[in-house]
Length: 158
Image (cartoon, rainbow, N blue to C red; front, side):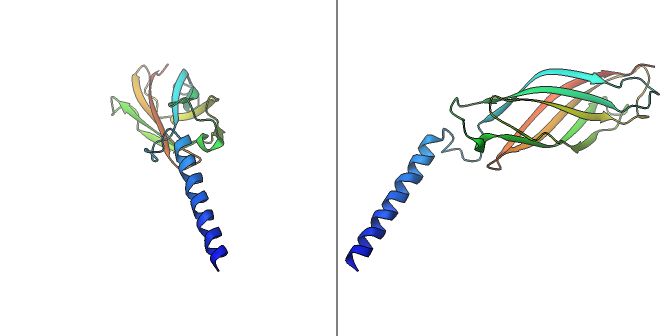
């Protein structure tokens, strides 16, 4: 009985050491709800601005997923983008929109291109210019939020 209790205590102690080491290796150990990934938008392209062309107006966002701490290297920090919304100004010209994103996982240091429909065909107002704030929501493998916003200007061509 004595040796079983001693082994159990050693196993518990070893488990505590491993848990402590795991938290210490993670720069966000004290901020477990913050992801280590930060999104940097590197290029923006708009397509389908023609009124009456039958095409949705879309935006293509090229991005890089950066490491905010300098130590994220495991797949637990990989990011997947899930949903987006666009809020336009001035508000009366085109309706706000939201939708799903199909990005797959993006690793820290990796790049991705997201193409999002932001104005439905037939909703364009010829000759008008709007600025939309694109809000993209995602998560890392641990379930921590990785969100970003970026402005996009659109001028509709008659």
